[in-house]
Image 1 (tube, rainbow, N blue to C red):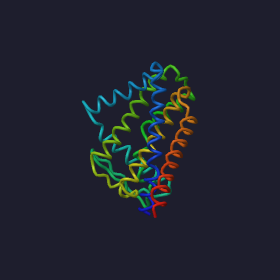
Image 2: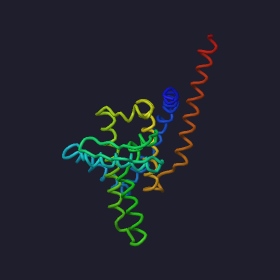
Image 3: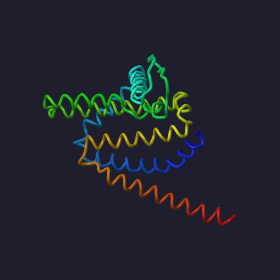
Length: 227
């Protein structure tokens, strides 16, 4: 199984590369209309500034990290026995695990989903249009929180989750691709007129296919023909 996941990671690597390219294009399109995205960008910048100069919100991240493990485990049919949250670490005891349960906290922006849920539900009863800029600020703030905390967790400490999910390479590739998809979807939801996921998807498939064709041709010409 670990060998298959290693192979999957290698095959997905080009997809991640072209996904990065397309997300950069999406971000450029969003930032090109800065007046519309100003609150969102400001929220992201404010969190980054606070995180690196004032307070890093470690316990707040550990809480949402472990609760995401627990919630996803419950949704996958696993019995959650215990959830422990400390300032710098935590854990969840459950009956069974899978790759989705193990890696979900690294690409599910829990606080972003919570803010969006509250906003959408409240908007059913009260017109929140005048507060859209505040909503964009909060989404930017917590999306920045998610990415910065995820990066810190993955690269500043040794995470057993990565080995448990199938190895570090597989986990990093999977988390990277999932986060790129999440970012694209969030930006589409916030700025539908500036973001075209259909074009991005077509470009992603085209780039991956062309690179795959080049690699296959190279293997045929330089390796197989040499045998």
